[in-house]
Length: 82
Image (cartoon, rainbow, N blue to C red; front, side, top):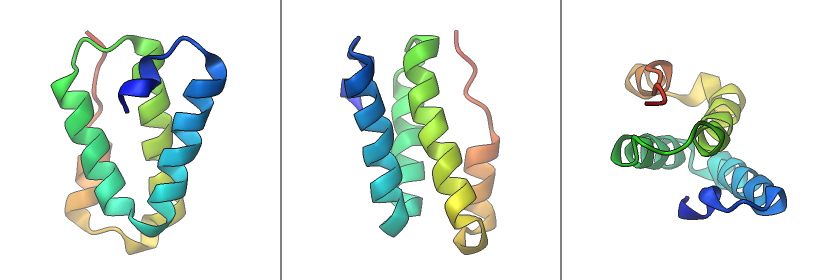
């Protein structure tokens, strides 16, 4: 996820795609890791935070029926940019 701070849009898109791909088989792990990363990097720029949040949104949408309430709550709480 640290590569999401790369200024190259192709690298950023690859990070998004990779998180979504991994989220197909391990959605809870991707969501929890993304949440933890965002909490540890609260000063992450809006643009870079958005890449991770977009991936989380896609993983949730694609796995909504398979997620527990606890995991769903994790993704509902917004991580405001500071």
